[in-house]
Image (cartoon, rainbow, N blue to C red; front, side):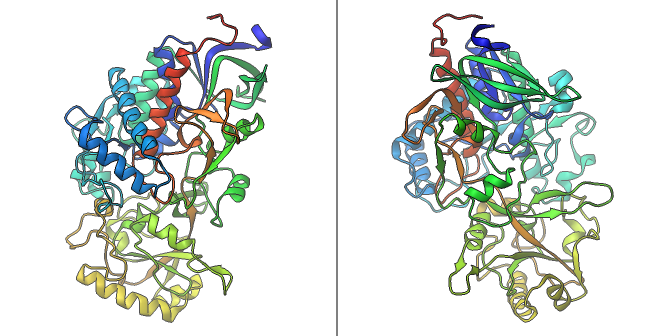
Length: 556
C-alpha cells in the first residue's frame, strides 16, 4: 500500500455518534471513500443516550429556518447564553450552518419532526428567547432497518425506546408511568424495535452513512495518529477479533476526523481539567478521551469552557442482584420530580433542584474561611410516597425502594446515617413542605422554569416539580458530579483542529463533544450540542470533498 499503510481511504472517521456519522455520510455522499471506526461493539455513541434535541433558529413550517427576525433573535439568544463568550459572527455562523446541515440530512433519508412545545432551556426571559419553536428531533426509527447491525444500536436507560418526545409529552412527560408502560403504546409498537429520542437520530444517521457507501466497522479502536511529511496521514488501529487485538494501520488521503466524544470517562483527565470532586461519567463506556490524547500527541491545542454549566449531579448504583455497578445522572430525572429535595451537610437546600445549572453553580461555591465546598457533599432525599408512582434508578415506576438506599424511620434517623445536621434538616423541610403544599417554592422558585415543568411527573398538584417530604420512612443517598466536561480540542468553525498558536494541524479534524460548542461559557441550551456536532460534521465532510488528496492523485 502507498506510504506503508496496511490499507487506506480518503477519510477516516473515529466514532459513531451523530457528529461522526454526519461527517462520514457527507463525505461519502460527496463521492469519497470513507472508513468509519467505532472502538466498541455499540453504535451511536453519546447520541444514542441523549434526548436527541437539535436547536435551530426557527423550526418554521419546513422544519428549519435561518432568516429575518428569527435569525436575529437566535443570534441574540446564543450570545446571551454564552455571556458574550461567542461573537455575533460565530452565533450567526452556527445558525446558518445547522440549517444547511439539517436540510442536507433530510434529503438523505433522515426524518425530522418539530417539537413546538419545547421552550428555550432555562432562559425564558433572555433577549431573543422563545417559548417554543426552536427544537426538532428525529422521527421514530425502526431499528430493523439496520439489518445485521440492529442489535448494535445503543439503548438509552433514560427514555422509553418506543415513543417519540411528542408521544411521551402527551402521556405526561418522562416522569409519568404512562410513558413507560409499553401496553399503552400504539398497536404493534411494543412488539417491534422502534427507537425515539437520541436512539432514533443515531439510527437514521447510521443508516444514511451506510447508504452513502461508508465502511462502518465495530471493535476498531484508534490507538495513535500517524504523521507523515508534517500532516496527519492516518492512524494505528487495534482490531478486536476475539483474542488479543491485532494492530493495523489505515491511511487517510484527505483527513482523519475525531468524533470520539469528550474526556468524561477518563478519571486522570477529569482530575486534571475539571473543578468538581468525585466526578463520575454517565456516558457510554467508550467515551474516555481517546481523541484528545491522540490529537495532543501530534500538536493539537486544547480549549477550556470557563464556568462550564453543563455538569449535573448523579449517584452510584452499587452492584446488586447480579447486576454490575452503574452510574446514573439525576439532574433531569429524580431531582425534577416531586417529593425529592437536595440538601448540603447542614441540611439546607441551596438551589432549584429541577434546574441542574443552578445546582452545579451552587455546588462549586467554596468557603475560603472553612476551606471546603459550601454545598458539597450534598444529598438527594425522598419520602416513601415518591416511590409509589415514580421511577428511581431506572427501575419500574412504583417499585419499592432498593435495599441499598440509606433509610431512616424518621428524619433524624436518616440525617444521622447520612451525616447531615438533623436540626438543620428538620427546620429546612418544615419550610419546604409548607411551600410544597402551597405549590410555590418561595426560596428558589422550583417548578417555575418552563423546561423543568415538562420534566415533572404528571400529578394533580399545581406544581409538577414540587411535593412535600412527609411520609416515612425516608430515604437518601449522596450525589456526585457528572455531565459534559469543560475541556475539548481547539478547533475552528469548520472543524479543523488547531495548535495552541491557532494554526491548523494539517489533516486533522474534530466535531461533537471532542470540539467546542457554541453555547460555551456560563450557559446551556438543550439541542445546541447535537446541532453543533451535526453542523460541524457536515462542514468537515464537505470541506474534505473539496480538498485534493495528499499526493495529488485520487488512488481510489
